[in-house]
Amino acid sequence: MTGNPATPAPLQTKGFVRLLIHAGLIAIPVTLVAIGFVAGTHAVAHLIWHDLRDALGAGGSSWFVIAVPLAGGLLVGLAALRLPAGTGEPPQLGHALALADPPGDEHAARTRGQAAGGMVIAGAISLVAGASIGPEMPMLGAALIAAALVAPRLHWPAAEAPLVRSSAVAAVVGGIFGSPLAAAALIVEAVPLTGAALYRVLLPALVSGCIGAGLFGLIAGHAFAAYHLPGDGTSRLADWAWAPAIGVAGGLIGLGLMRLVDGAGAVADRLRSRPLVLGAAGGALLGLVAVIAGERTLFSGQAELGAVFDDAATITAGTLLVLAAGKCIAIVIAFRSGFRGGAVFPLVFVGGVLGLLAAQALPGLSEANGAAYGMVALAVAGLPYPIFCILFIGFFTAADLIAPLSLAAVAAYLVVHGRQDR
Image (tube, rainbow, N blue to C red; front, top):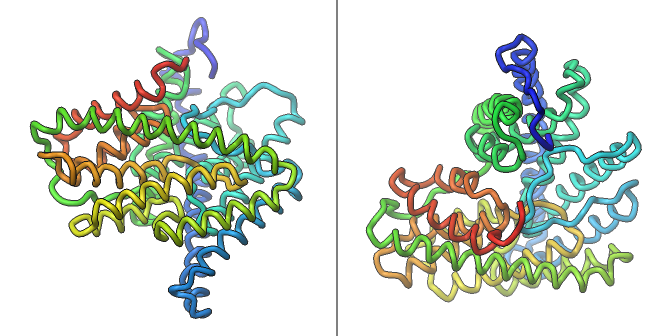
């Protein structure tokens, strides 16, 4: 998966058809694991943040909002200390996904598997504790572990072993974002292949993405990522000016966040050998941010952004500014205090909130359109795949908004990733 073979094997063969069938089969347990991960973390979070909170009479109490993330930070720190390979690498902003297995011997592969398991455990704790972190990375980690266990039982061809990883990722992405097209776009942008070699990766991933999207729809009733933008979302003449402007602004905000995360990493490195202290301090700070800026700064931001959209007609510019600033601070803290997870959903929250703020300030810009441009700009800042991000956010917009939405994505990409080698 690192280059084009000199003479790619033809696709119209029984072997390749079997590979497509294998991709569909492996998508079933992988997607079920992802659905189970989401359902499990949601159930435990509801038990703690609603049932336990009500039982303790702590509905309006600040101490509970600080205590739960603090406890989560302690547990994440304990996992880093006790698990054989720790909890993996800290999350990053703006980095490409590694869809190919890095070279190494069997011991290195086993160590990577253990680290992935530790990341999944720490990710589940982080999500339940309310850390400002997305579920996509621990979901992918759990799916890849399931794929590695299932592939030998499906007699996956040894020569096509690298496709296990991309097919598993495609199944989860198709389920999270509700479309195999999102999975296909991610594969096209993330895998450095062209021509027939690309299609040997893309077509199995497309099949896996179809199964993932279908199972999520049948079992969960909807994709994980489902946003209902506020108000009228049709395109206007003003959108052609405001979309790239918001893209540039979102890219600059994304760059600023990347600098803050890097700077906080230098501070956190001093406590890296004391993960319990680092996790507890980070958790307490996350709770404090939520007390000051509002509890919508907790968690991934997927459901919380929906609540902000519900209040779009009445929410004030000051409240939006405080929410966006608080969420940015919470992202920096979560990313550098031992919590594990992804960046996409927290950044989309920031983009949606700032897009609403832009709609209040800019003439001719509707709330729905401003939110969409902000969401795609911050998504591109966190994940350097503009086509995937356009498809992701475009699922929730009017069809005639895709063109200005694409301009916002291109502008954000140039600001954040334009000088980086891909």
